[in-house]
Image 1: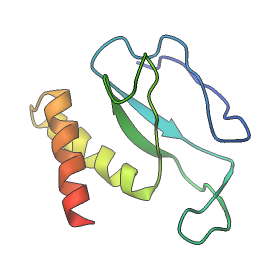
Image 2: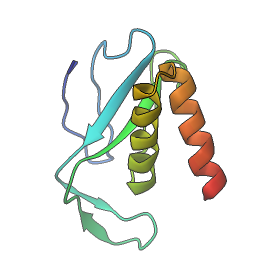
Image 3: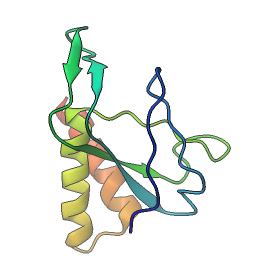
Image 4: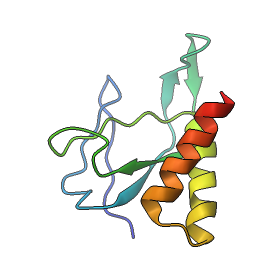
Length: 103
């Protein structure tokens, strides 16, 4: 279920009040322009990119989220594993580890 939406500030930060109570939440970004971290040039986001945030990813009810093409692949792998019966946290952490090992 959708828990909220937000517009990023000039630094890319955003707040969704009360979004994570426990477990995991999928965060998706779409639209806008951001600096490509590899090329260092502005890049238009052409499609939705997503990642998962787990409870405990940040401090004091704050999570830091980085969304990029690799996070979308990690989210897709996590969704697949959740659909295959893995618990959310196990599926997401395993997906992160697999993608990190690949990179």
